[in-house]
Length: 268
Ligand code: MN
Ligand code: MN
Image (tube, rainbow, N blue to C red; front, side):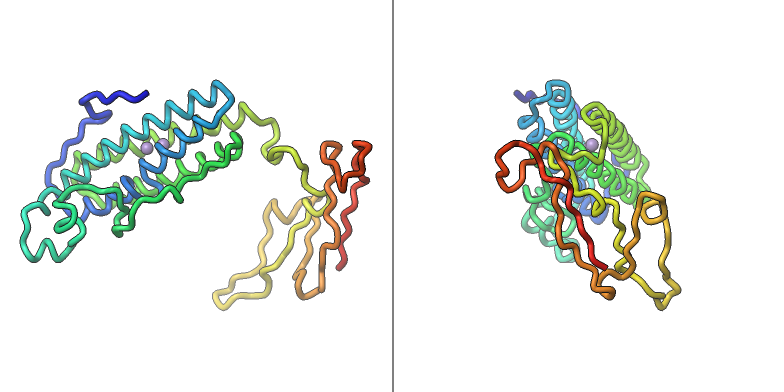
């Protein structure tokens, strides 16, 4: 259940309001990486979660994000409020806020696009959802950082610094939760990947670019257990079979519960 307390999680003070900045703040109100998206994503994942500890974590952070929504909405409202006093110049600058919104916030991003549940990443698989949440927190962090860099007002900067800091706290908590539910981060649910194919690196972007871009190496294509396939399309490379190894996976109803021998052939 939810209960509202008439206090903000962070006290918002704005020295000088700037409607242009208020509009940018809407990115964190009704935008793809904003607080409503975070609150809904974690809370709905929490409803789906069977692990009691992670369910509690998801509900804790989901609810905190609602408090962030309130802080960022209050902040945006303070910056947008001058738009309430209509004059043709300010209204022409942002008709959506001035004419349709009366200087208030609505669930849109900074370009006026309506918030959508399509922003949410909810798979019903805890470790997969936790990975999405780690990425979501990183995106929220970078958006707050960009907003801080575009702002001169001290009180606004402080509120954004608080919100940005909490995203790092959440990022860490989701990383720890992922560590607690998985021993091997490359194991996703049950069906294992096909041997050999899983250790191939396809070098599909080759040649030298106009700006001197060239083929590079890194741990992903330069270690003993990785087989590099250069220019697979140009060398008529094709994968002809991708049978999983697994004891857990039954194939083609072979009935006796034994899996087939691994069969992964590649032709070059
Ligand atoms: Mn947040
Ligand atoms: Mn967060």
